[in-house]
Amino acid sequence: MPKFKAGIVGATGYTGSELLRLLLQHPDISIEFVTSESKAGERISSIHPHLLDISDIKLESVRNVSEYSPDVVFLALPHGVSMNFVKEHGLDRFTIIDLSGDFRLGSRSIYEEWYNKKHIASEYMDDAVYGLPELYRDKIRNAKLIANPGCYPTSAIIPLTPLIKYGFINTSGIVIDSKSGVTGAGAKAKPGTHFPDLFGNFSAYGIGSHRHMPEIESVIQGYTGFTTEVLFTPHLLPIDRGILTTTYSTPKKEVSKETVEELFHSVFEKEHFVRVVDKPPMLKHVRGSNYCDVYATYDERTNKIITVSTIDNLMKGAAGQAVQNMNILFGLIESTGLKHIPLNP
Image (spheres, rainbow, N blue to C red):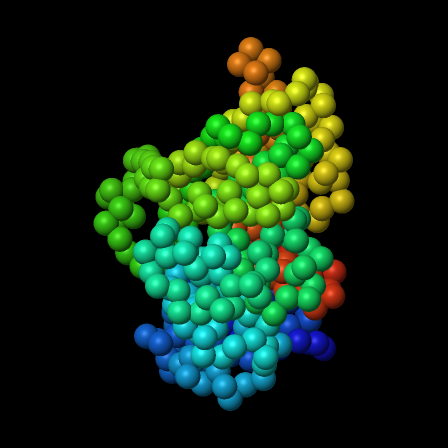
């Protein structure tokens, strides 16, 4: 019998749909409500036909949330919209897991600089815990507001933090090269994600100005105590889901391929969803799962430490990680409802 009640605000996008897919099969969760302003009154299966005969829950307006008493509310809303919900409802009635970027940076000035929006709920920024379990598990357990990480930052922070924390690399000049499937851009059609533009194409964007750059730097600094300088460049792949991130950094002490591999095995050996692999991972090795596969090596010729990581951007990069955070919050086994075997091929 379900122990906890959950609601999803914004259930018609890719992330909301993925959250619903996971929570419908979670043994300890009952779904109290799902909302959509544009589709209120319709059945969820009419919007997401893959849920036909699985869920016929009716979409409601967010104005009806006050009629329910959930234990946790997931905000699958655009950047700049989640803060309105937090401002209106506060943190006394239920815990909020926000999948937007509104509470990830911890500073109103930094948020407004990189998102070009006024933050109207900055008084809650100090309450927010960055929801990357591999770093902040202890804080997540008692959180009332969890800022679910960005998909790109998840794929970069996981491999970089051991190298920085244990003094393996210089903290400046770190290069992060990431490629993502188009679902990372959201369900709303845009010129750059239009099929004729996307198919058979490959492009970089946000060079030197992407909002995930300060997120990566601030989280690494908060966790390790070291100020970092990263150069992050995202690319758009002509596929639906998945992220592959490669990082390049310079050692600050004598290292070898073996010592780098030993570091990663020792740091992640007890993690539920980080798998250290012995050759560069592929996207299909994690597709549809909450795993992050990480490969790390040292190139003696160029004196660079190289990591390659893969995640499903809708799972470990969004909905899966949000459910992982919820499990920690409720004292459940962390992998509950997330034991999905990757889809390959």
